[in-house]
Amino acid sequence: MAPVYQKIPTHDQGRPPSTSVDEEPNDQYYPTRLTDENRAEQVSNNRTLTKRRLRRIHFIFIGLFTAFYMAFFIARGYLNPHAVSSGTRIKCHETMHRLGLAGHMHYHGTHRNMSIGAVGGRLPTHYTLPSGDKIPSVALGVWRADKGEVGEAVKTALQIGYRHIDGAWIYGNEAEVGKAIKDSGVPRKDIWLTSKLWNTFHAPQDVESALDESLAKLGTDYLDLYLIHWPVAFKNNGKKNDVDTDLTENTYPTWQKLEEMVEKGKVRNIGLSNFNVRRIKNLTANPLKVKPAVNQVELSYWNPQSDLLQWAKDNELLLEAYSPLGSQEKVKESLIIPEVKAIAKELGITPAQVYISWHVQRGTIVLPKSVHPIRIEENFRVTLLPDDAFQHIEKIAASHEPLRTVNPKWGVDIWN
Ligand SMILES: NC(=O)c1ccc[n+]([C@@H]2O[C@H](COP(=O)([O-])OP(=O)(O)OC[C@H]3O[C@@H](n4cnc5c(N)ncnc54)[C@H](OP(=O)(O)O)[C@@H]3O)[C@@H](O)[C@H]2O)c1
Image 1 (spheres, rainbow, N blue to C red):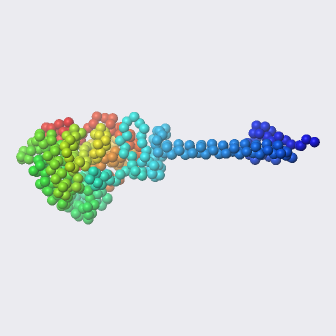
Image 2: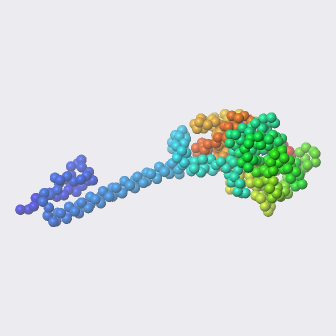
Image 3: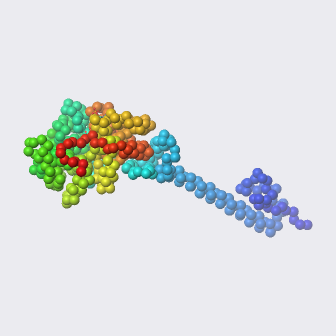
């Protein structure tokens, strides 16, 4: 009698419709008695089933792997994150910020990305200068901080945690700034102190005495940074603002004297202020012993100077943003720009903090001035902005005619 058996079903034969190929085969589908031949067939069919299962697991694994990487790249901003609403993006960014991923976001838009990004989801607290010195990214500016109030402002700032004061001989308040530094109890070595050489003292024979006067008033024997305040030299002849054309067009003799001050240890770093690219190149075409450490220029919503910033980045010259809130002439207006207010609201910070953070995120030092403790504190708290918020400020700042709030009229075309 022929053995009684049923053919082992394949996935499309004799299987109840509800049963998947991966399910264990039901006994009733097996032969009751197996010959060697159909036992071999069963083994072969079992192998086929195992292979199918493995292949399925393989596909599931590849699927999961791909999904994980897609999510990872979206989180890192390599894929377009602009498909969701702005609010969602900001919240999503905040989460990524906490995860330490946000700092790596990059904007894939039509205009240049001015964001330096950030390391570990944070804005830099310091930048490293060519000398190797580390300069704090946020400073207290003391221009138009009057006598009788500037000292308190400096002490408040130092208590809050500022370690960078941006002053100048021409501000006329160095003695009070120096006294406040002493009274604060913060060691001099922990404070970054900047002053600036005024236009009247560009002649090499006048540089050291001008510096000595600042040092004496500030009560210190060295400056961390000494800048040529303007690319404009006045003759030191008692006449008001009498421009020295030769020394204005050629800064090298002044610079050489400043290099000597570095050699003498009276200043640790030297730099420029209000220099455009042509004037910087004029100077750096000379065989400099010390590279300019920074160029301090007006940078604000009103005058973002993106080209200068890009050039400075390309040439590894750090910019310092003065009048970062638009100076006293434009600060009120700056703080009510609707887009900036909206970003501030979304992030739970103030419009002033949006601007100050934007500057640091652009890769510049920022020098907000205030004499009010509450504002001094406010201005010190910088936050990494979501990339789209950062780009939006970049865009709106570039969408109007640039406007300088600081533009002295000395009969020299400073900006050419
Ligand atoms: N190298 C140069 O040629 C040059 C030129 C200009 C400036 N700078 C430097 O840059 C620093 C800053 O520039 P700046 O003083 O022109 O302008 P700024 O810092 O943009 O603005 C200062 C003005 O904003 C107000 N302010 C500050 N924080 C505020 C806040 N959180 N909310 C509302 N108002 C606020 C200040 O008032 P209160 O003080 O009353 O709070 C002041 O009227 C100067 O102090 C100086 O160190 C250098």
